[in-house]
Image (cartoon, rainbow, N blue to C red; front, side, top):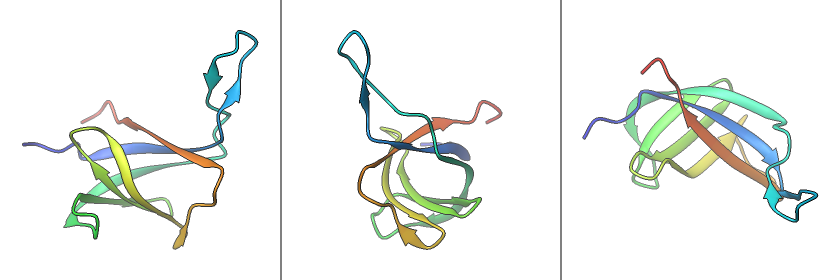
Length: 88
């Protein structure tokens, strides 16, 4: 199985409620483009790094399984979202 070579990771505050009562993500407070390192992280998923972020991402579900930002764990109340880069 071929894995995406890069993703864009967005850190957003907790979801907010729209006027229609639906949950929406907040405005991103930080983003980074991370590239595959060829290594597997402690979670067992491929490791991606870049722009101060280090993430283990499940390529089948595009779920971030582990994340460090500037070497530290993410604070509670932040949500991680990813998008596959279109130039892959």
